[in-house]
Image 1 (cartoon, rainbow, N blue to C red):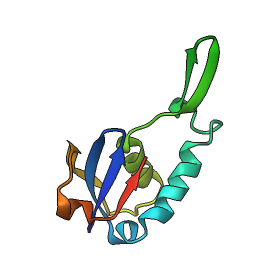
Image 2 (cartoon, rainbow, N blue to C red):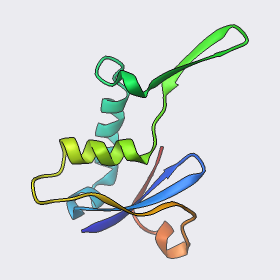
Image 3 (tube, rainbow, N blue to C red):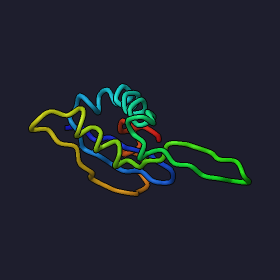
Length: 102
């Protein structure tokens, strides 16, 4: 099992996952980005905001969406993905772990 850091907005979460994910994290981020950005299959992640009469649309999610996607679409039976730390500031050693930014 490997540890990864998921950076989102002002927070970082540490997750433990199978080594094949931590060793190829960017590949899984690209796949997740495609999945979560598809408004036809993932409408719950799309949000609209109106500012000054103009409507803006975008994707909004937290690291929970990434871990749930891994559980439902990537990992095999008998494997697991789980949070070790939530909403923390990584120290120097933790910043050396594989990481992605949302």
